[in-house]
Length: 239
Image (cartoon, rainbow, N blue to C red):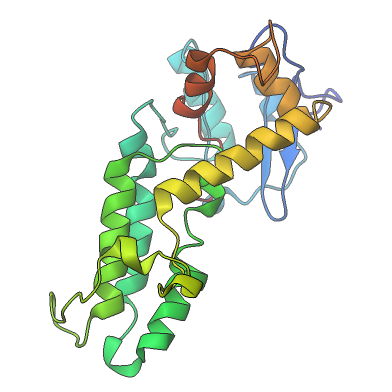
C-alpha cells in the first residue's frame, strides 16, 4: 500500500476490470500510476530481481523520477517483435545443454534430461503465446544434436533419426518427445478451454474485454484470436 492508503490499478481497455497487483509463488507484479505518491510504498522490494515498465505516453522526467525512487536501472522496453522477446528461450536451452557433459551421460540419461529440463523451459510461455518457428526449430535442432552427440566436440555424432520420428510415441517405436509447435498449440487450446469454461476468472474477463467483448470465445473472429496470441506484453520480473 502507498502512503495514502491505496495504489491505483490499471486497465488494459475501458471495459476491463482494474488491476493493482498480481501475486505468484515467488513473484509479484504491481500496477500503479506513474506518480511519486504511489511509487513511495512500504512494500519491501528486491530491486536486484525487479524490473519496471512504463506506458508509452509517460513523460520522460516522470520516468526518471520513478526509477530514482526504486533505485533501478533504465526501464525495460518490450516491443512487438516476438523473435526478440522470446530469444531468451533459445539462449537458455543452449546454455543448459552446453553445461552437460555428453561423455558422462548415457543415451537414456540424455533423454531424461531433455524431457524433464529442456522441454519444460518454454512451457510457461507456451500457455499464452504462439512461439514463432524461428524459435522452435533451433531449439529442436539443439535438442536433437545433444541426443545423438557422442563426444564433447562440436558436431560430433550421427543423427540416426530425424526429430519428427523421435517425437513419435514410444508405443509406435518413437522416443515420445514433444514437437514444440504442436505442444504449443495444445497449451494454447488448454488456455482457451479455461477461458471458455471459467468466464468468471480474472484472466477470462481481461481477455474478453480486450479482444472479443462483443461476442464470446467460441464466436470471436479469427483476427481477434490471432491478435490475442500475437500481441506481446511481458510483465514478469524473472524470465
